Amino acid sequence: MLIKTLNNGFIHPASSEITTERLYRERRNLIKLMASGAAGAAMASWAGREAMAQELARPGKNPALPGRKSPVAGAVTMDKLTDYKDASGYNNFYEFGTDKADPAKNAGSLVTSPWTVEVEGLVKKPAKYAIEDLLKLSAQEERIYRLRCVEGWSMVIPWVGYSVAELIKKVEPLGSAKFVEFITLADPKTMPFVGSRVLEWPYTEALRMDEAMHPLAMLAFGMYGETMPKQNGAPLRLVVPWKYGFKSGKSIVKIRFTDKEPKTSWNKSAPQEYGFYSNVNPTVDHPRWSQASERRIGEDGLFAKKRKTLMFNGYEAQVGQLYAGMDLKKFF
Ligand SMILES: Nc1nc2c(c(=O)[nH]1)N[C@H]1C(S)=C(S)[C@@H](COP(=O)(O)O)O[C@H]1N2
Ligand SMILES: [Mo]
Image (cartoon, rainbow, N blue to C red; front, side, top):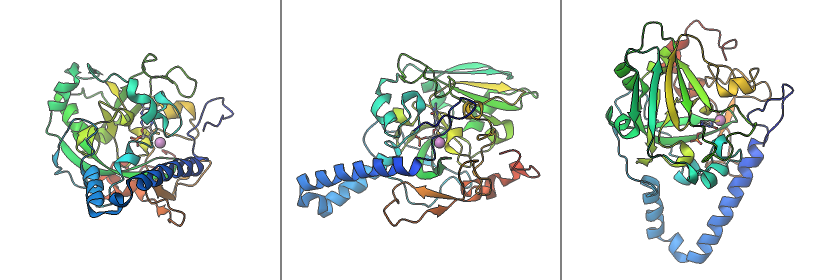
């Protein structure tokens, strides 16, 4: 749901978040109920439950992409994994529509091969990588990160990829490089909502150099042991677990090193609501709603309690130092 702002831009559709999510869930529960009726006793059987556990371990929707256990501190949260169906069926990817179910419905048209990623700007070794080569640049790791949307919901997803830092070290940024910009695909032929007024295209995000170099900042090529579903940002996306979900740009085609703080998509659309940093911070409210709690997708039964949102999404021990001395109300 879009809400028009006074500046004539559009804002993240949070006020309707609960309604949207509830509707989505009711639809899904209905489908489940119908399925169980048809399958009868089989669904309730041990074999049925076993099959569901298997499905969670490896959904079988895309080619396998295994990752070794990550040695990075804080890279594996013990929180229960979100159901793959939710992680790949409840998405924000505005190039394919603004409803949570739209990306899964519409992203099939995205062409992910061939795919190249260009590295440019203030680097000694600008490069053009075929996605296959970029995948091989470093050993893949599986990391289980929480992802919290500014709208107030969160998920726990096993991502496959490696630290952005691995790529940054390879291309050798110049001393003058202070920021890294991530530019995503904007192809009106395959992305039906590119060209709509909802955001400026291409969708872009950016990090300060030390944020991008933090080992938790991840280039993700897959999830749940498989290559990335299109609706989740195939073939390559960013995952920055201590920032609101929107900082994790999907379907990246360009990585640019700059000396000035880049403008980002959400910041351009509503600068009073979305700052550059966008760190998960329960003490800084969004101008129109609180950020103190969140709803974990999959725990949203009628009586499910909201969870308290943690500073830096629970990654404070790892990333807090990056912001020492900064006024996080000013740099929101
Ligand atoms: N290119 C692109 N990347 C994007 C978005 C988008 O609309 N376009 N939405 C962002 C938002 S708001 C969120 S919350 C996350 C959602 O990721 P998920 O759908 O995999 O959970 O992707 C982010 N990356
Ligand atoms: Mo989001």
